Image: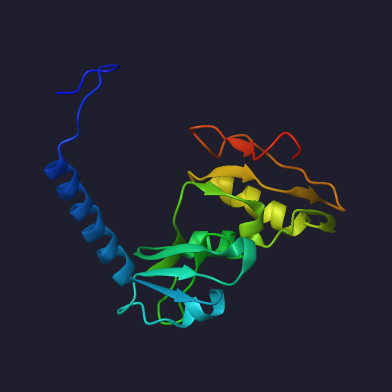
Length: 171
């Protein structure tokens, strides 16, 4: 039993056991994840053979996706920019979807640049729509510009409220 503030000597056998367990878990995860260059390649994968995929070469759109069974028809229609939900070619929307893993969403995952120059209005609106319809949390990781007015309704869609946080005081 460890007591806070009291020095203790680690037990090497327990440390080895813990390290072996972690290595085993990581090996299992790494052997089951495949990497693809983009969302187009992800859509073409055989969902009966691949369940976890990392999209690797799409800048702010990179991320880990799992194939989840279920009816994603409404979410595919909502997420037209494929920030979170990506329809597999070999599966109907009513049968499953590739779903971004994690709790936080950035406008960049919907194609926004966040460079304080490019008009990001379309991506910002898509990001907001998914945030309002799901349990994801919002994360601002750039300076986003909208050439048109953005009218976001924050009422009635979420029961737990909406959280949007920034990366630094400069954003």
